[in-house]
Image (cartoon, rainbow, N blue to C red):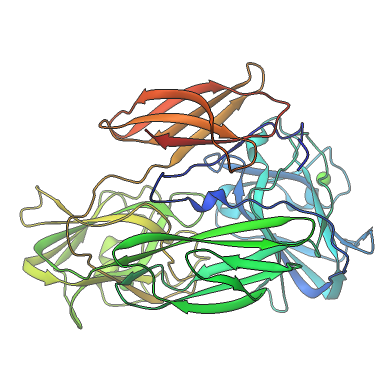
Length: 477
Ligand SMILES: [Ca+2]
Ligand SMILES: [Ca+2]
C-alpha cells in the first residue's frame, strides 16, 4: 500500500497472547475486473464507527449512489435516519449537491435510509467528509445495505477501518461494489460450553483465495464450517481473503468454558458496553436458571432507570428496562439459590443498538461482598439482533478474573504538535508499552515503554510522523 499523507495514523489495540481485538481487521482495496450491481428500492448507509467513537456526533456533507460513473438523482428519494435523538443538521443537506453544508447526527442516529419510488441499480457509492474541523466525526467503518421493505437488509458493501480522508468537505475514492472484501465473518454464539460445536459463517467478494487459521485452512469464498473450539480458552479465528491485487482480514473470538455453578442470594449485573456507539442499555428480561428451571427473583434494583427495572424480572418480554446512565442491576432471590446459567431477552423494540454486549456478573449473600461469576468484557458477546429473543450463557467453572481486558478506550491526535494521546484499561500490577507498525505485522517500533499501569485506566502521549501511515497499539510488558 502506498503511504497516504491524508491518513497519518490509525489506532488499534490488542491483548498479547490472548485476545487479538476485532479492531485489527484491515482491508486493502483495489479495483477488480468484474462489475457488480445492486438493485434495490431501499438503501441504508449504516455507520459502525466514526474515527473517534467516543465523540457524540457524526457528520457528512454529501452522499452519492452511483451507476456507470453517474450519480443517481436523489430528488425522488425519501431520507430518514434511525434512532431516537434526532439530527443535529437536517438530512436534506446530505443530498443538496453542496459539500459546503452537511448533515450531522447524534450517535444513535448513525444510519441514513434512502427510499426510492421504484428500485434503482447502483455499482458504486461515495460520500464527502463533513465541514467541521473535528475529524473525529468522520465515518471509518460502515455498511451499505439494500432491501425491498426498509426493514430487512442485505449487505452490499462493508468497510472496516477505512482510511477516510482527513480533508474537509472532500469525497473519497469511489467505493465500487466489485472490490475485494469480506462481507461477513460471524458465529451464532461466541460463548459456549466445552465440546460444543460452533458454526463459523463467512462471505467474501472477488477473493481468489480464502483461508481460516487455527487448523481450518483453505475454504470456499462463501461458506459455513462447524468446529469445536479449544476447551477453556478464548480463541481468535482470522479469515484472510486475497486476490492478485489485495488482501483483507477479519477476526472473531470464540470462548469455550467448563460449565460451573454458584450459590448466592444476590446477583449483580454490570453492563460495560452497548452494541451501539452510545452507552445506553435496554433489556426485556434478565434471568438466572438452575438447570432447566428459571429462578424467580424477588426484586431488581439499580441506580438509574428510564423505564422500571422491575420490567427485567416480570417474565414479560413485552416490557423492558431502559437506562441512559446504566449502573449495576442487583437481583435479589430472597434466599441463596443455585445458578448454572443466565440469560437475557432482548428489548422488544428498538434497533438493537442499546443491547448489552459486554458486562460482568457477580454474586453475593449479603449484598455487600461480591464474588465474580462471569466476565464478558474481553470482546463483544453475540447478542441476538432480533427483538424479544432469549439467549443464554453458562456460568463458567473456576475463578473468574474480575479485571477488564486490555483495550484502548480513548484516543486523540494533535496535528499541530504531532502527538497522539492514548488511554487504555489497565492494572496497577502491570507495565505497558506503546508500539507502532506500518503493516500490522512488525511491531518493533517502541514509542514508549515501562509505563506503570494505574488501577483502572492509564494514559500517555507519544509523537507520530504525519507523512507516514501507521498503526498503534498498547501491549502489556
Ligand atoms: Ca451537502
Ligand atoms: Ca420484561
